Image 1 (cartoon, rainbow, N blue to C red):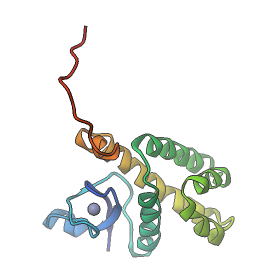
Image 2: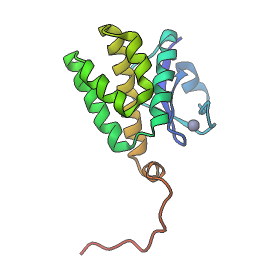
Image 3: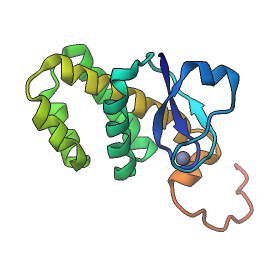
Length: 154
Ligand SMILES: [Zn+2]
């Protein structure tokens, strides 16, 4: 079965949804039931689901902001391009401690590292698109302050 990556508009968890469901029905977050938005990325298969969900949970737990997500997406792209993952992995592990066991288990396996970074890049890109657009950025920034009348430009 083929899966597409999607991101929850409310809790910002990335998850994989069956491609056939995307066309036939509304897709909802398994965690909170809110609407999922399909995000750009590759097509995933059954064997990718475990890794995708593990990484999604690690990113969600860390509460990554839109700005951070953009930086990490760029770092992941650079690592994928250069096929050097170790330094970026180390940097990620300081921000996302949950990733350390995964880093240990895959060691220097470049193919496994590439899968991790491709998946992370999809999740980060999705976060940038979702958090960075309109109302979502307010959610990411926490409770909205009481807004006074918008200041007019001079
Ligand atoms: Zn959700």
